[in-house]
Image (cartoon, helix red, strand yellow):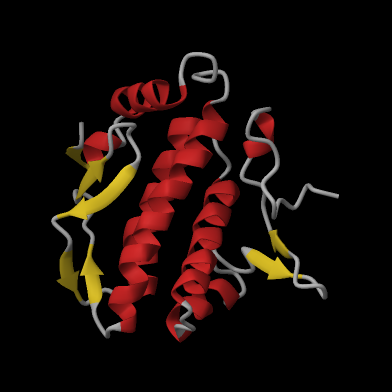
Length: 186
């Protein structure tokens, strides 16, 4: 059953941990909590960039206050932001005012290094740009600005092989294993 909860409610420890338990089951939760939070964050970041990048390509921004509603599917994965309102926020502003507090909260909820979560956010941004076939300078700047949290989240070698800068931890769950662009793969 689809449900919508505010982001602040979603990130309450009791609610979020129940969601992860229902999603991933007792064999993984809580033993693999950092992995589970990392994996769930990928769905959130993918949704975030799927909404933010096209809005910026169209010359608009989004309004994503910290109390935005997040629509979840039956499993507990993010489907949409509700209501999704047009705004004037640049991607940098969204990164500072929405993603930074979110990353801090997820890191605390799951004992996940912030570098892992920022790596997920950057990986999802780069994948979004690839799938939409856009080269949005504002988004590229987030990925290429030294010292920024998304800097060099993804790179390509001389053969075009894609690599993440940080591992998403999926390899710690045997049936998931290493992702195809894991920095830990030989």
